Figure 1: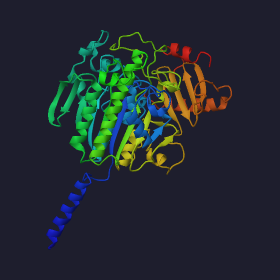
Figure 2: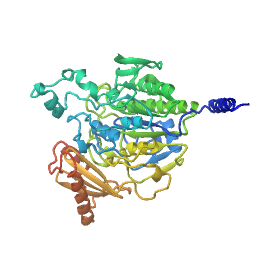
Figure 3: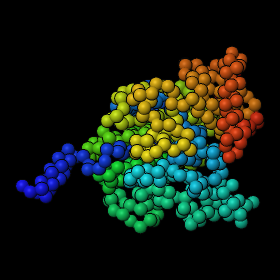
Figure 4: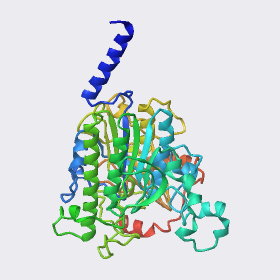
Length: 484
């Protein structure tokens, strides 16, 4: 056999072996999937062990085969800023996106799909985006559509041509099936075909559509390293679910709770389907899956079950934040400590519970590291892998910071300093007291030092400083902390 024939034989044999093992012929770089749920409270995974009515067997199994973070945090208790922090890997206050209603994600900010493309990854997303201009973003409107200043701006007043450059299809995502309810901005269809960028309507249950879009992406791209952002629009209001999911919860309970559980069951089925697809293609072991919520559940204090299920505006979404105090919109643990799981069967421990503070900021830093890209100093997150596999034993972060509306907070080790207007708290958030016992008079030096760290951090932000007034959050703090 001559040299050329030997080369042909060797290549053919390698291909046949790979095909038999159902493993793709690409590099050892892991695939990465980020599953991001919406207004999903800490309690609402079965594996959290908080409540008996929630049924999430596939996510629970993923946690048992991966690492469950019991101190996993988001960067804001609200959707637009938390998503901006996740995708940039930077505190969103650094570029002025402090809250909903300010600005869209700035075009000059580099986001994770753009970085992953530099490492040779195929990128995709489906579901909620919420980072394009909208009618309540007063700062953006004043700069870009001054003719609308002083008017009552409607959603339709912002033309799509003004939004396009901010859409995921223009921000580094190769495959895009972006949408929340029934209208989607797409460049591929659910049969796996490329299509011209367009809006389509799919009136099926939104969570099933978003799962289907993720599965189609895997079908299209399983033979190359990929990054996929699965941004489920649930259990955020308006609540909806099909009888297929609702029938799993026949027990007596508030209807809003039943619908939230049904929506989480749909998400859970989706996670199971995604993992099954990865397994069938032989790539599950070398796929990192992050499962994170964008903020805690909105309880509206009293968890009223009065609004119609399909009511689209602010109301309790049926999810719960037990055992933590507070809710969406608050920098108490109920607003920012969220479900957080990382799975990588090939490299991470199985069934591990990790209790040190980690952040959604860490997703970008971890993804960049495992993709082989150089460390980006502008990122505020860290590569979690050395901490989860035991190579590093210190805390991933010396401090985690927050500022939202008139609240600000810092967590250092087990302590959390929380400032709400002029009110100040110090909690040990690593013990069972959570935020029920204010320790500020017991540890005044600790509180003072942490406040100084917070002030120094706030001085680095686009809008500097901390608020000394408590306005829209006052009712929450009067209720949840009235005797603390």
